[in-house]
Image 1 (cartoon, rainbow over the protein chains, first blue to last red):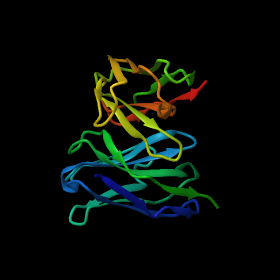
Image 2: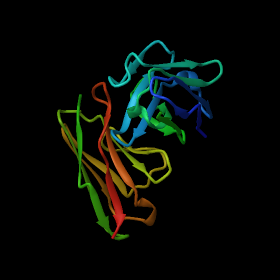
Image 3: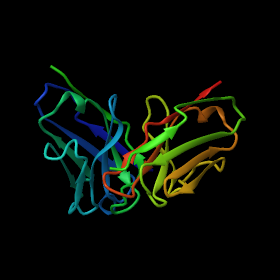
Image 4: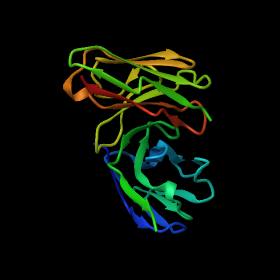
Length: 120
Length: 107
């Protein structure tokens, strides 16, 4: 069955950086788009980034554009989220999620999430 | 950006009762509307996609309807495991967006 396991969360000061990782198993990773979705106290559920199956197209939420970068390693079934210039409002649980297709913008399987706390 | 509004905020019902949850979009999303269920400490679970299609393994008591800007999730007869938060989601336009959620709790 589909399994997604996130890691890399933690406590970081405002202005700092973190890199989240997600290891995928149980499906053909290279043939599905992937998402990072966060759940924050302020804005609820928000899709911050999606990446196409082949990694050649990415979309970002306006709130993170220019600060976050999504990438993937199809050889090792890994998804990443590089987060720079972190702000207090980025605090929340970050979920890695599998798309229903190559780039359908709909997630059908989710990891359990990793907590990111931005605080001084 | 398309804004989704859900009502009611909280729905208090007893097991066996029918639940009707609403989602309204600020502009048409065609049929690209999905519903997720989330329980405390868990990730969201996809229930319904493209307005009325149940995801794999979702019981038949869950059904979705609507089009354009008005959508409904119906749970025909609540089971104890159905008490949770339900979110609608649109993928018609980027950025995709989620509603603020409806909590279905035990009366």
